Image (cartoon, rainbow, N blue to C red; front, side, top):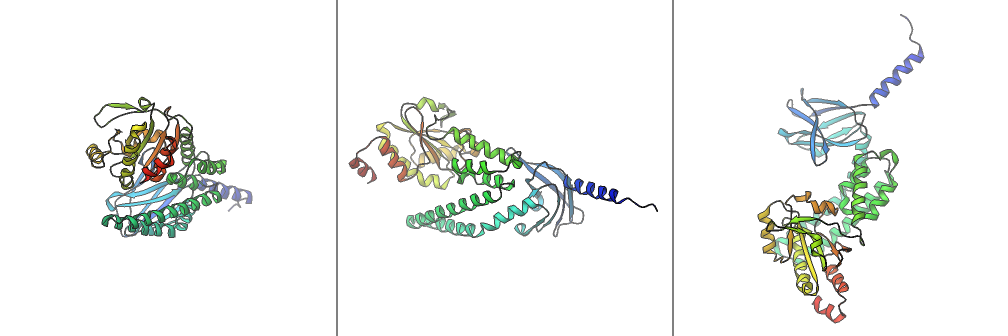
Length: 375
């Protein structure tokens, strides 16, 4: 037998390694399930789409392909209610799925997924405290205990701050991983524009092509367009009677554009305060345009009536896909923007006493008038 030159062996090994790095191979097992169709999906614009499918053979499955850059995909088996998220990159990825305990599924071979799991583990304590705070708030609401509700709210606010700092630190330490822009966009409601600009500026150029980095940059562009001092973007939407209202038609009054929904608990809790300031200031040149993220027209109209919201209301009944919400970068509610008479943005996300105090400042009320309003 002729000898193979050592250089040829090296070339073969190198070629083999290069081929493996140019594709992913997902080899998985589903505990206790022998057959059925299983799918590999990725998120495309606004929905999950199938990019590959196969049938289980004695509980095993394999997916192969290539991806230009690591992305969060998911493995799904609808009839068994199996959904397992996984960061797919060009490597050999092994997955063990446990249908009865999906959170205990084991994923190995994806460096990006390892980084993702590090973050998830780092926030476990905060998540647990957040769950406890929410349960406390929910129980208090059922019995009408506003003191306990306020206490739970204050705890949640502190925990939100801790979660935000945790993610900012994570982003700084993992600026070369696509996991960072992915997580930032998943939690973008926590961040104001300066935070996002700083995180984006620190991202390594190697992940600029990631859809998550691009989404982050798009969100920054949107928030820059609705900064305080900018003219409010105009939009037209149908009111509760089906007639169109254009934002610019309300120019000449101090205007609060209030983003809310009938199904949003915190929005409904805030509504009495908004009603209060409307009654106090409407005769002084104050107006409100309520923009609902509802899908159900009847529930929207019922909430308007039940909460006595006697101002302008619009909605395209598209839920989170609300066109005005997208225009203003709204991804959590309640949210609002306050406009001056020329429809320049003068404040954002005012709630409770903050809204009352800002309006007192805008209308230049005396200290005596402010005290009367507060009472």
